[in-house]
Length: 361
Ligand SMILES: [Zn+2]
Image (cartoon, rainbow, N blue to C red; front, side, top):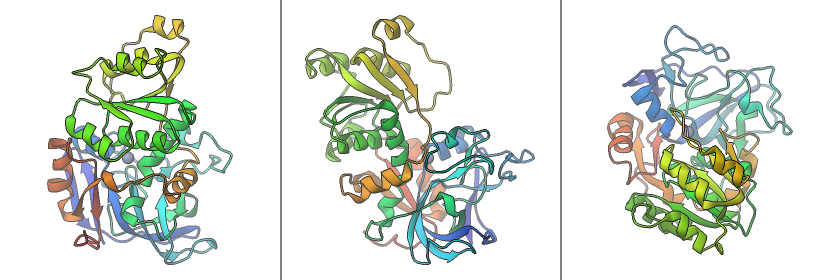
C-alpha cells in the first residue's frame, strides 16, 4: 500500500510498503481522510522531535524512522481482529492516536494516561499512520462515529479534541467570556468549542484572512486586530470593566501571552495550548496580585467520546475549516508547501491516501 514516511528533516517519501498485520484486539481501518498537522510540519522543518530517529527506536513502539506519518484521520473498518466484538466491518471510525505503555491504566476514569512516561503518537512514533491507505489500530484507541457524519469533517475530530480538552482545563462555563489569542487551526477550533458551549468568544489575530475565517465560520462574536486596537481595553469594555473569565494562548508568542495576562479578570484562568520552543517571560507579580491561574494542556484524555457527541449534536460545523483536499502524492509539494508558505489561507488540508473522494466538491 501507499504511505507517506518520515525519514528525517526535509525527507518525507511516498512509498509502497507492506500492510500491517491484523493482530488479536485490533481492527484494520481504510483511511478516508487524514489532516496535516502543525506537528507534522515541525517534524519536516525542525525535526525529528516526536519521530524516533534512525537507530533510536521509541521505547514503547520499538520502531525507528522511517515511520508512517498522519495522526488526524477518519476511516471505515475493513477487518476486525480476534476478540473485538463491539466493532464491525463497515463502521465509520476515528482514532485517538496514542502510543502509551501497556502497564498504563487507560480506562474511562483515567485523567492522566496522556501524561504517562514516553507517551507518543500513532503517525509520529510508529504503529502506522493515517497518511497510508490503511492502518491497524488497537481497539482501545478506535472510536465509532455516526455514519451520517461526513468522513472529511470527522478527520478534524482529533484536533477538535485537543481544543475540547483545553476548554475543559479552563473550567469555562456557559455564559462566560473567553478570549482566544491566535486564529490558527487550534485557536479556531478552541473558539469553536467555546462558542458551542455557550460562551461569548473574542479572538485576537493579526492576519485579516484568519480573522475573517473566524467570523465567517461563526465561532467568534468579534475578532480584534491587535495592531489596530488595544485588545485588553476592548475586552474590558465588553465585560463591565472586569476582563475575560478565561483565555487561551494559541500562538507561542510572548506579546500574546502578556495581552492575555492583562485581559483576564482577577481570578481568571489562562490556558496555554501552544507548544513553546523556548522559555517565556512571566509577570509573577501580576499573577499574584490578580490571583490568576495559568494552566498547561496537552492532547486529550478520555475526551474523544465527548468531542464526538458535540460534533454529532450538530452544534459545531467543521466544514469551514477544510480549506483544501489533496492526493497523497502531493503531500509535500501541495500540502506542506501551502502550509509553510501560504499559511494564512489554509486551515486544514486533508489528504486522501486512496485518492477516493478527491473529485467530489
Ligand atoms: Zn496534530
